[in-house]
Image 1 (cartoon, rainbow, N blue to C red):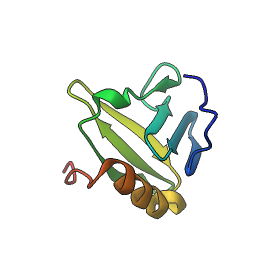
Image 2: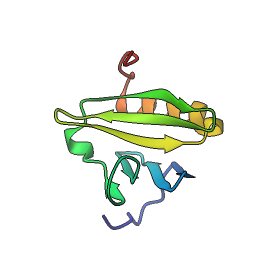
Image 3: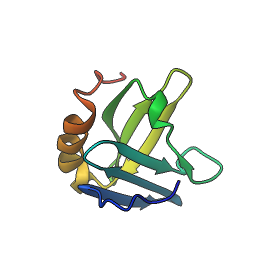
Image 4: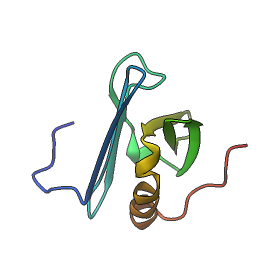
Length: 101
C-alpha cells in the first residue's frame, strides 16, 4: 500500500520480539500493518473491519485488535502509546468493542 501524500495525524510503530507493527490515523481513514501472528508484514484489511479494541498482550506491548468477519488482526504497540492510540482510534473509528475475555 503506497503512503498517502497527506500526512497522518498519528503514526505509531512498534517492533516487538521480531514482529513489526504500524498504525496510521489520517483525517479520513486508518491504515495498519502487522507481521504479528503472520508470515510477513501485511496490511490490515480496514474495509472489512467491523470493530476494534485495545487489549494487553504483555508487560511491554499492547494489542490493537481489528476484528473482521474472518479474522482478528493484532497490531502491537508500546504501552506508552496506548492512551494516544485509544483517543485517535475512537475519533476515527468510533467506540471500541467490549473486551474479548
